[in-house]
Image (tube, rainbow, N blue to C red; front, top):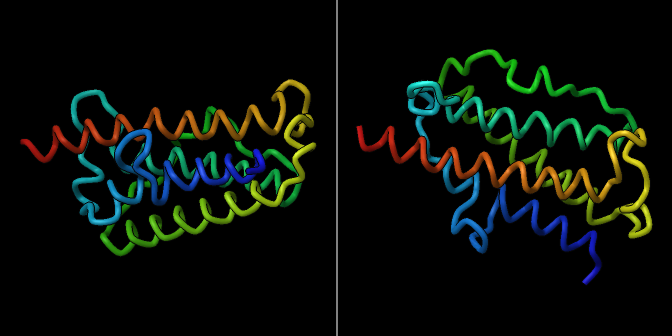
Length: 156
């Protein structure tokens, strides 16, 4: 199997449909979650909504590089979101998250293998491979936080 297909499948796995690494994924954790619970602040932790939007921010930013060859996102803005105000708004966000993830996975899958070792916009950001791998690892890191926060909130 081509490396680009493997990377695309790993992204789909952590966000949309997999259980191999974490025995869950974002869609499984979020799709039936009430918007109010997603916005509950527990101690100094980020909210579940903040973490989901944070990961979506990076997925959108990387997608933009694939589509427009420009990197417009900045780490300092990766948690700057307006609060979700309703269940309908939460569900719209989740649908956008799933659709944008599927789009990025499809773009990764179609990427020529040799492009994986090319610079990602600028030499300082490393290669396409490094950024795709980093996105997947970053997603798993925050998925673990979401799972723990959700368990704490549902227990209380």
